[in-house]
Image (cartoon, rainbow, N blue to C red):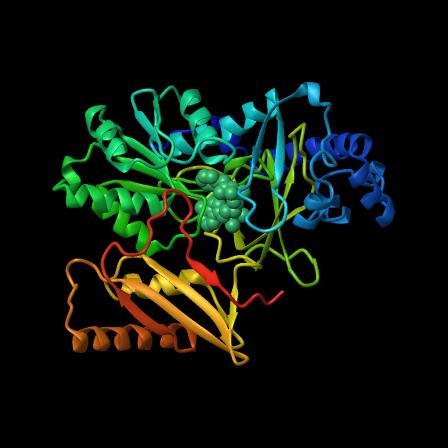
Length: 434
Ligand code: DLL
């Protein structure tokens, strides 16, 4: 029996949803045009006024916003409400260029937390659950978002933040946490640590996990589910639109339902900007339909994705997005070949390794070097050079078959690659191609 947090919205007919989206869009475009000079200029350049937008079918007429616009407009240039009405900021880690700083009114925080509550309920959460939030708290949206959602559902919330794994496990077992929220790489690490401590899946009180913020494969899902004895649900979001909860998985585990009453999704051709039909692979673009303080219209996420409206057994009618298949900007081009880190992960899991790896790319004498450092598991660990070389060769062959190019695989000792308490650092690209 499926459970919903806001059933009327989550199971709304397509017709009613379109009507709702159209009403919200008309209001939102007016709000942005009148309050955000930066976006008004973009619309003026395109010769568009709010009067041209009569419903969701007119969305394609509006200009896109990109990360470059966010940088240009930093920090207040896209703010659509007076600062007096804002109650919160959140921010991205911003490893390249300026950080993204997103602003929230009270209503924005409220709708964001509703989205996270929908995700928790879809994962089987209720006020009988103990929800351990092990995403980072602070500027990162993971901790605050799931914390707010957990409160809304009425779960007993353990605001752990990430890190201090021993303490995570003590609270989890002493207080019988039933839902764990963190990045999939941290969930895998927690599972690994529990296993080392002698816990079997049936001894662990958890029943569900809500994992996202970074790409992870189906194979990784199965590994985490087996180690922790849970059902693992994906959750997606980005700081620019609010944070986690833009989309969430239900019990069917075949993609994430987008909270499309708040975030309208399009798939576009990343090269031409043309809107692609349902089922096409392309760049995901979001329009915030009712956010007040930082309402981005047609924001290009750089995530490569596919949308589907196939009927879902959970009863939700919200459009579904597939797991992001990489980004228009994290795709590595090595010796002219496109390489996604998720492909390497798939090979590792297929070959019986854990997803503890690091890709190192460099350029020597105008040639790309491509190395993958992979941890041996304790089960296959050996210090016999001949055996290690044979295993490295086998793994390199499997990667060649998947990618079309040959990496130099180096097997390293268990636990020698730094563990992440947030998003794992999978790629070290030393080439400085820009
Ligand atoms: O990662 C928000 C979040 C927190 C989502 C907790 C889920 C759980 P940012 O730091 O702004 O926000 O990063 C957003 O992370 O554009 C995707 O490329 C990636 N991403 C987020 N969720 C997933 C996911 C948070 N489930 C960027 N699968 C997005 C794959 C994801 N990639």
